[in-house]
Length: 312
Image 1 (cartoon, rainbow, N blue to C red):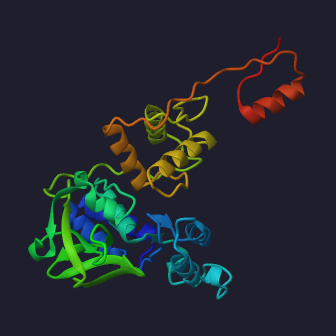
Image 2 (cartoon, helix red, strand yellow):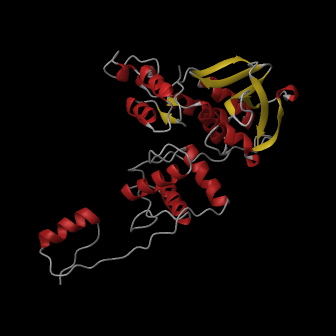
Image 3 (cartoon, rainbow, N blue to C red):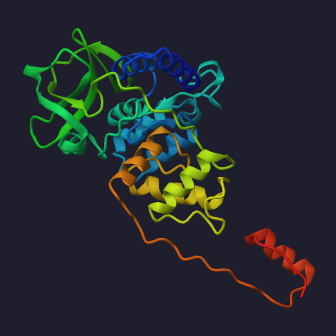
């Protein structure tokens, strides 16, 4: 099984070769075969803490929560740590997704943002799709395939990638390559998939401690959307305030609120900016001057809150 780092390296190599978006998605999906399914997850690292997080969410069904725990040796008691786990190849992490998370993270790699917190909302959002139809008209090309709930036909209960020649890749229990399921009822082609347009420059994954021009870009984007990033503004330093802003944005867009800005978060930010979205009014910032402090007390305040010290 490939690690997440393996897949990222392979993807960059294929992109450098000039592969189309369809080819990139198919090859990357095949490289992720074996990666685990976790309900509610979208491109999150497979760690005991992350599994515990998704299992503990109030929206997670009880049976799904039990499966999330049972499939982790560090949580089910069969092992003390991740060492030796199937999902920890060569002591390196893989990613966890649910069925729609698997679709989103692959689409985001080639610059396609699919919105919706679940299969049904993704299907209903016409902005996601170039074309769609029933399975009897399935085109012989890469597209998404859906399972419609036969008791309640307003619900799409599962989604996968159709990769052609009667094969599909989907995340159910784990990422699998299988013959097209008889349960498939509908198909849809994501907007932006057709054509050989170059894949956008990949923005790096940013987290607390990151610095540089991409951090500045992220901070400017967050400010434009109404999220405060701290008194220093877009200073190119990913600190506590920027992390808090990223978490707030992720929570408002049905993403894992881990404070790490990866492909899915970048794509969601770009989509929000394009839509002219402002989630909340920008926070007003103030500077406070405190007089008549001892040097030690002044330094304590600066260490805690930031700022400068000057003698009276």
